[in-house]
Image 1: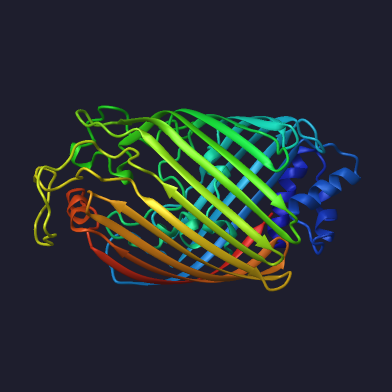
Image 2 (image 1 turned 120 degrees about the vertical axis):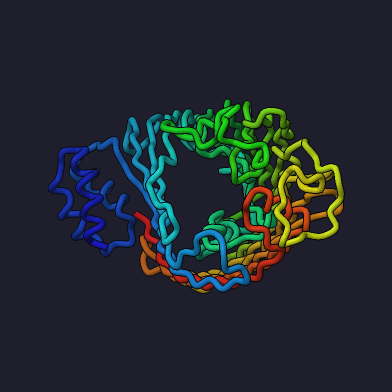
Length: 443
């Protein structure tokens, strides 16, 4: 731990031409402060008004997954997730404008792990007067939304939005928390107000969801010859995208943090639906979420509901019915019963979470998530996730946790045939149990 602190310290000290600060900070490592706070305090004591600061989180997870599906995808037994940010401000104590950049690492036994640009934006303002961000940052709707995962500790179950890294899902039954087509890596303008009597609001505008980062697009360009119509408009293929996306959010906080308190949120997404495939149209984006947190002393209870409606679903429907899925049949999109039918949507997610702080160090939590995705008026796929976790704080900068996730998914016959035409996993049911232990480090 001290080696890590020392390396990060050297980077900050070099920016301010004061490398001798490193030894002083390490001497104060036992204080209940994060590394970035210790560096800031030391610089202040030396009379250095350094415009740079840093922050970051690291989550090391080891996992044992037992599930009915044994084939398809990668099944890591360990993973590292991290976000590290470097920030420049005009002033150290009162930041009115600046620049922040960040990188994300998501690495494990699966076939990925390279750092990617997560955040890069210019901001103006502060929490006291409101802020404007221009660049590659989260949508207002995503940053303000509340759901059952808002109070969970540990890995976070479905609320982590990364559960599918470990889980072989069944044909379109699983929907992560929040809006699945959110353009959190695309260039945008985001405005967030200051809080007035507990109320805050925000709005963001994204011209094109394909501008996912400064170096490359994550979506195929229109008329890309490598994209076949058979794979059009399935979310994992990224052939559907959106333009002129507007997101908004309103939140209200009330009460005493030490007694009764709570928070409410209402968020929405609208935008023009587009696709890279010639001759196929998709639905426009229209989604919303509502959520609430209620707390009393050491207890917290949270609820969330998100309706993605028909956002970016294909308007090209199958022409025949579907009685059952035939595992031995080679389905293609030329088959009249393969594909969506009227009534198909992009999924709804329900969530509830509860936590209790046993003492200042140990917190336990439990959550339940349910997603429902319709492939026609009377055909649907569902997923249920029950999670329970405990987390113990070793220090302000580090904690350890253990978690259990029970996952149950069930995909309808049409979903299985649709996915087999896309050369994807088509199993109708999966029953999985995940056991995790991990360490979180904050700098």
